[in-house]
Length: 161
Image (cartoon, rainbow, N blue to C red; front, side, top):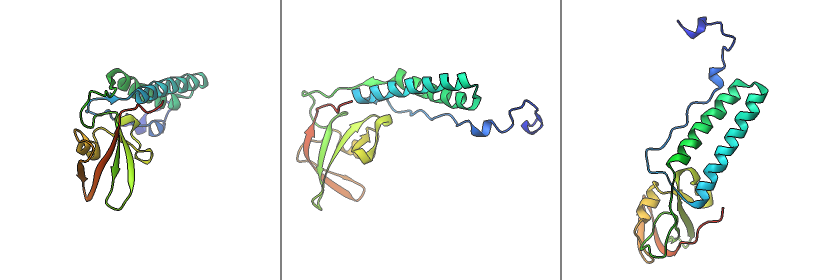
């Protein structure tokens, strides 16, 4: 029977519940900062669910449940990676300073997918730029699309939470 003919008093509610958040098929590598962010998001989603439940807001409960499922899955699959001084070349968690031919310099930190934010210099480990950087060292030149950049510094210091 079509949902148009149901009389359960919830017509239109499904349109307001957000769809499931897709979970990446890539390894869920995380920095310490990223792991803390995932745990904070999971706590926030659980608090939103409790608030919605107390208010009897089924739509908000559904949306909070969706976020709980996502963040719980991301927490369960998280692989904490801490760069080491013994690592050779650029690896996950490191910050890389690139010098571009036009004189600009930009620092990019390679992080997990959930904490990536290019406006703040954090790129996902599965991004084309990160993939081009992996294994490179100071003095190496990388090319991503039309842009080229020279690695001028590598920093293994973790980003503060």
